[in-house]
Amino acid sequence: MSAVLLVRLKIPDLTALTALDAGRALVPEGYELTRLVREELYLFEPSPGADPAGFEPSIAKQVETSNFFVNPNKEGYRFLRSGERGPVWDPPEGSWGILARSRGDTRDAGLVERLMREHPLRGLGSIRRGRVWWLKTRSRQGDDGARVGYAALGPVVDAGHGLLVNPHSEAALRLEGATAWSRIEAFLAEPAPAVEREPSRI
Amino acid sequence: MARAAVIQIPGVNCEYESARALERAGIEAVIVRFNEPASVLSEFDAYLLPGGFAFQDRIRAGAVAAKLPAVERIAAEAERGKPVLGICNGAQVLVEAGLVPGIRPGRVELALAPNRAPRRQGYLCRWVWVRAGEGPGRGTYAASLPSGAVAPLPIAHGEGRFETADPDVLRAIESEGLALFRYVAQDGSPARGYPDDPNGAMLQAAGITNRAGNVLAFMPHPERAAVLKHVQLDLPGPWGEARRSGAESYEALEGPGPGAFLFSSLAARLGVAAAPARSRVR
Image (cartoon, rainbow over all chains, first blue to last red; front, top):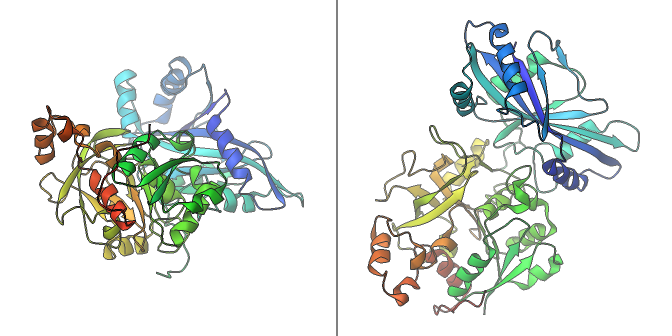
């Protein structure tokens, strides 16, 4: 179990607005993309044998009182302690999500090194990084359009399909409905799954 | 006279020096805004997507620009065999649009991922050495670079690591010579880690072509080394020597630099006689 920090801009997010604009051109006829929000995700893992309860209050304090993770002038955040976040992660109402991570090691050693230099903490092992895109789509038939939306806006396949994730450098997990935190942690911590591809025609 | 379109997308910042480099090689260069009617592009013989930060690199470098109608038209012209050169951010656009390597035509088969080097993160500006191999793009982009020659060129990128998650694509790139340009050590030996290999790219690739060899995604900036005066004074090797010994000579400083080979190769491919024109781009 690991603590999670989610950070998003509270000023207009021009990257998300650009993604919304580009994404609207990609959703197929009969579907509509109405909202797109970007959040940065940090997963705080304890060092082996350490008790998360030992460092999570310190992390929470740093998040709240320093601008190391969050610039309060422009960003808002949610800090979810491991013991309090519940077993599942629910998307914002009416939304579904795409959680993206690097295909390489998701641990940000440089960030930990800088954190330890500026705000020494005991018991913190690593910080894993991910990015969440929350989307609201709908179809004329009234469904949430998540499956079609993921195909149109998720991992890039060609110039006309996919936008938010390049599957050759990133892996993606579709977040639809309540998702177990254990699945989120495994997705971020385990090696990235093989890229999906058509049968070889090379 | 051969004419090349240099595509000006919001956020790019190398369109003028790229156009000048083309004109020095004798190619008429026209800067074309991204939102001109795409049909305008068909009038050109070649295309250059310059470096910079198209759409501020929002979402991912090159990701938004890759969806432009102009890029779609350039892809169609590339299908007809016209040369398309993407430099740095332009390379990222070509990769995101699936124009290189084109193993499965139209599919996005590569990424230009964040640089990876031990204990280094982020944007990197420095001079590197590259060497051209044998591959389908050699005739278009490296014909005037002597075989085995090493060219010093500047790089400036945060996401320059060619990567694919598809082992079949990697095999095809390697076996077919599509990684036309590779980072090497100054003496031409293989790059073994940073700084000779500046970003951890697969196959130490600095530039990858499509199978036909007419589309090149190239991460270094040859337009920033197109004339001798561009070479930094303390660069080691023969180009640095030439820069230092030519410091007092206007003619020498205005002569070809180590990046000129790429534009002169392209000019030869387009049938331009080897008589460099003075740039008319201001």
